Length: 354
Image (cartoon, rainbow, N blue to C red; front, side, top):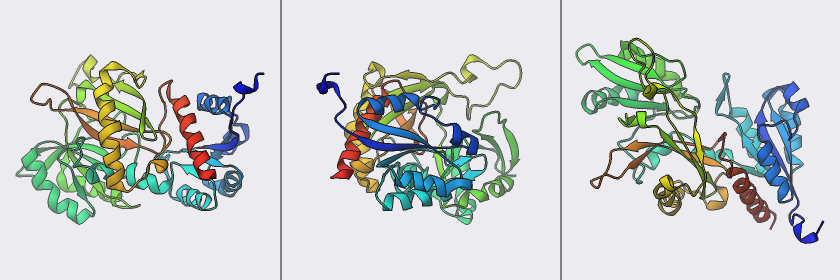
């Protein structure tokens, strides 16, 4: 083979995801859901291997990670009742000893939690956002806001798959009755006393918890735009009709508008999303980094920002409201993203080795 076509770089990398002992034993790049990422990395000279994690064999995983140049992490904040508390300690220890880790747990705690919605509410993606740091503050401040500003959406600080995300609307001011709808798949609206809902939310204040409060976006049935980022650059988009927080019809088959649809993936140059791309690359991401004190090399190699359509502006153009950032386990991804990930990984590993 022509030497000019040989990969110029040679680094070792582990791709870490959660699984049991059997999954760890049998894992290969070829049978991984990240196979396209492995292929993109190999194409530029980065040798990557699976690192399957569980708390029961954490020591073996630590040894594996300490033997490579870098680690890419795909692990949800909450999975079958398990959190990332122990894993985050392990990753901090590994990073302190030399290997580069993305996304680093400290970066996730800045941008990959719902608190980012409050801390960046002044950006163009923000809305009327509030934070409750304690159960007492939640009880004291939320009722008046709910009664005066219409339906609200509450979000626990760390979670995934709709866990701890609720639409809340007042039914009876005199009796403090609310209708709540959980964002988890299969949830149905429930009417209950506001005090009972407060009690249900108390666990959210554990594990560095808080509750973030935003207004319900009336254009939710028009879908969600997921903007995929590699570092500070857009790697693609996904548009999806969603069902979460949209009540089912009272009877009969669900209307098409109420049905979740497949996420339609688009490359970074897709015409419908170029205004959002410019906002993300030129304005919102740089200002987020400044607000959160994150430098560009610390941004995850793959992360996404989920946007809902906000009220149209005076000229009739769409606005966008940030509803969350995913930095712990951003997958599936557009077909253009693996190459973008590989390029960013190469840049980061080269920088870390200087």
